[in-house]
Image 1 (cartoon, one colour):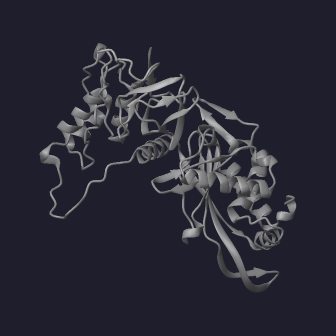
Image 2: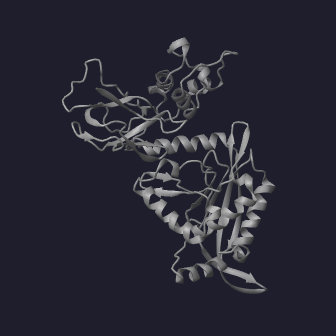
Image 3: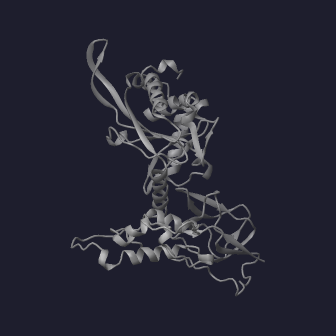
Length: 398
């Protein structure tokens, strides 16, 4: 019997994925539950297990940077190694993504942005809507060729091609090179574009005195706990999120979902971009547990070994660029969460202590907040409380 291997749907919102690698070759024996391929989605690789015993009879789609719609057949498993593949089983054609110019679009596209189609409801596929949004195109100006006039991907791409023809291209004598987005970079671009376009960001900054944290850090190190400043911030903010539940919320349509569990995400830079693994139940974990878990998650993030559930459902994120000498920056909120804390470098500078001038260690942090959920006063109180516990960590048992 011939059985299909399909591009799995790994989440409710997943519409397409990327085939990273086959872990079996054609003709090889496969056991049920054995990992046979890796798929990229949500900025990390996921291992896909076989649902059947048998043999990898035919590979229909090779690993590439081209997105594959979910449920697309990508291979076949057979009961015997020489079982014939019926002629009706044709290799699916994954259309290579057409090059869409990102150069300046002329007035034809600008006109398209303001075009309307009366009260008629516009039918369009999700991928068509996404491409149109990325290029600032009003779908009301695109003619659909799909069933019942539905706008499909090719319709939007053809519209862009017509609107950005040879006359609109910028002529330059400078040598250049075009580098295509990797699958991970595509996902990052989509997520961050969505966040900036749909979440009304605002930013609050404060300077923290970290002398006390620095002293405790050395004490803990002598006890065998080599915690970083990021670990301390995870530990402290996790406990504050219990006091400030809106900082641990998610937006769902026109509702705010409040969570009991405090799950803190940590931005981790990897070769191709950025991923955000999550420390679950951080408010119930001690400093050593948080430090060990963060190191483990960061290492597996860099090797592409994170599990799907380890990067999902994160509401509050900490992003630290201090190790690069960055003193202050504004981060983009990780949807559907409501806040992200951007952490700068530790600096030594003169400070006043009881009227005396001395050298002290300081750190700038900037909180990016979703104004739909969190008002300025609420965010200000959170930062005020964070400053208090960082500068006086004895308020919270370490």
